[in-house]
Amino acid sequence: MKKLYIPLVFFAFLCLTSCVDIEEHYNFKPDGSCTVAYGFDMSRAISVLNNLVSDSVKSTPQFSLVKDTSMNYFNTLPDSVISKMNAEDINTAKNSSLHISMDLTKNKMKVNLDYQAKNPAELAYYLKHVSTFSVKVPQQVEFVDPNEKVVLKPGDLKDNKSDYKGELLLGGQDYYTYEITDHKFSRTINKSKFSKFLKSAGSRLFMAKAMLIDMPYKMVMKFAKPVKKIDNSKAILSADRMQVTLITSIDEVIKNPALMNLQVDF
Image (cartoon, rainbow, N blue to C red; front, side, top):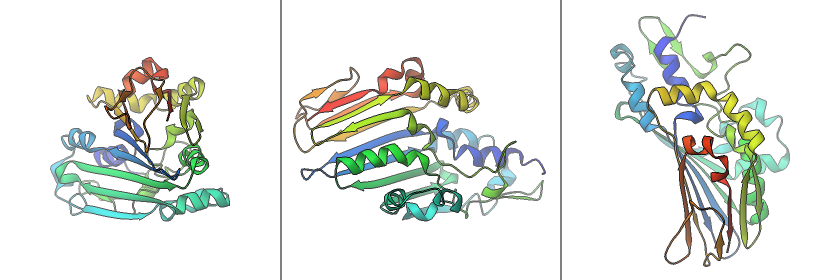
């Protein structure tokens, strides 16, 4: 295969967990249901990478593509993933939605994944299994390098072992253990699994840091009743005791994974 140079690097960065601002939002309702939303903002990484892209690539229609669209999460999954999913996984994916907002010329690339859990059991299942799903990179996203006469599509991305399947952002979530009831939300990081994740993502983390791309993380939880207790020194409780906010960064978490441990009694 010909070298794809900057377009390949650029496209790959759109799909790396290492180069995004991550926000998790939970909205617990009085009936026990909960809306959970993952927000991934790659805009700052795009602004850095834009300085590395040649003018010839920037001038292509593909680079100027603007997308603002919502779709069912299940419809983004490749057949190879769907074939391994059970009925509950499929139902969970079908009840999730994916929103993509992209304008590369304005350094904008945001992805949101939303899910409505009917009860604590559904929420726990979703959080445990969402990381096993893979999202296909939108097929409309292509880059052409006029100098190389190469059209870059998702299927062109390969490593030494297998085709790159466009796994989007969720790969690290499986290092958490959750316990969720009508009155408690508990999340504990598995240090062994987290260590393995760091090893697998080491080169990407190093590259992001070398390019001065920091990796902030924010978690916001809204409750229908006042919070009784929080077990995390970095978590901030609102004055009305109805909202918990946890703000940190990947750098901090690497040094102290326990920062991601959180228990809220409400």
